[in-house]
Amino acid sequence: MLIKTIAMTTKLTQLLKIKYPIIQAPMFLVSNVAMVTEAMKSGIAGCIPALNYRTLEELRAAIRELKANKVAGGSFGFNLIVNKSNIKYKGQLEVLCEEGCDFIITSLGSPEETIKSAHAVGIKVFCDVTDLHFAKKVESLGADAAIAVNNEAGGHRGNLSPEELIKQLNTHLSIPVISAGGVGCKADMDKMLSYGAEGVSVGSPFIASVEAGVTDEYKQACVDYGADDIVMTQRISGTPCTVINTPYVQKIGTKSTWIENLLNKNRKLKKWVKMIRFSIGMKATENAAKKATYKTVWVAGPSIEHTKEILPVKAIVSKFVDEPI
Image (tube, rainbow, N blue to C red; front, side, top):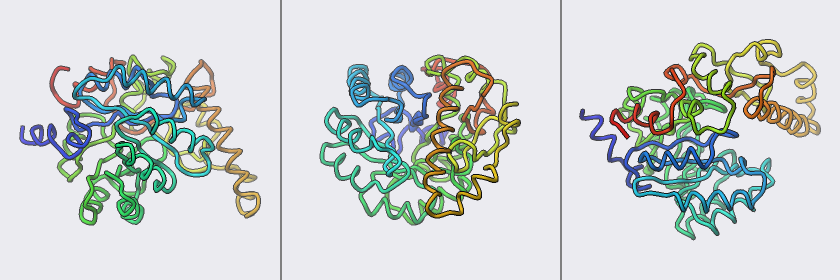
């Protein structure tokens, strides 16, 4: 009961004015307005990758719809890829600052420009980090919180265990630490809070939500498979990424091909190989998420172990906070 009381009031709930210290994590191709709307109604924060929208006008429309749907006790934000691989970055940042949102989560690159622009219009910025070195850097740039991506996260994950990463960051940072990865039930969330996290970012359990914008087959896979079925693959983006070990993944393997490894050793060709691999991998992931195909590349983390049925977002949130929503 003590942990539950602590969980209801943390630095994250105060920063975002939410009821529970949970961020519905931004998931490429999965997160959408319907999911985040229900997250807000359930008293948590919801986040969508800006890259889920093909055009800036679609992004702008999504922001306006979320602003219209916002309720007290809920909060919404967007995830920005802030390195050169995202050619839409500057336009996306401009639209977010023009239209307004509660927070931005930055990934893969320096958040300096995002922090300056967002803070100028009252938007908070949280930054994905996997180690202390980068965490201290984003703190020095003015980040409002660090998203500690651990080795139990889905998609592109960190190398340190949740306990090690949270405690390490808390020892050396003055900004709040939000744990990302390894939370599939309330006991997992309580554990992260006991390590010193001010909140948790939860992704994979929400894939199997009624509102998720993916195929029923993808949702059902998160029910049928478990933690032991999650493997790391380099065949999507060229860097290790967690996916469900479907027969198709087993067929194509999880390692880069010998030709890719050879070309990666050439400094001039390396970046082009990565770009091609990323493009091919993302297309395969999109096809698997949005349409029926035998080429099932479904991104998920080990926290699907606790996913037993497809449920509305509010029912999933209820399981984490142990009370009806």
